[in-house]
Image (cartoon, rainbow, N blue to C red; front, top):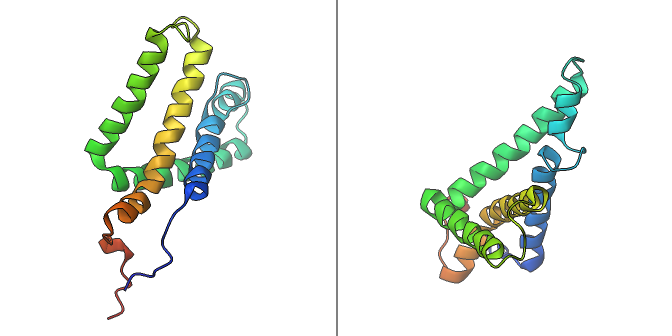
Length: 143
């Protein structure tokens, strides 16, 4: 039987988005402080700390991507990218951000990726709350 304490609140969703943002921004961002830049600037020096950080990031990406794919599914993921992509398009179309301002557009795309991953981590909880249905993965199996 599934336990009753499986709800989620706005703080839980926000926390998932926050950690997704850390994961995305630690991997790459337009500043010089990201894993990408760390690798590029230390490409000639083989450092185990760089490899360890890469493995930690890869584990984080694996957890988030797997949960997002399982939660949203391919069609839901397509809809999420379409939704946020259209918002980005609207912002650029209304000239709130210049399309040639690559840094700002890059930040916006990274934030969109963070939101999609964070929502993907939370979606099964939201769906369960909205529909009242329990996923097969939620059952104990102790019958």
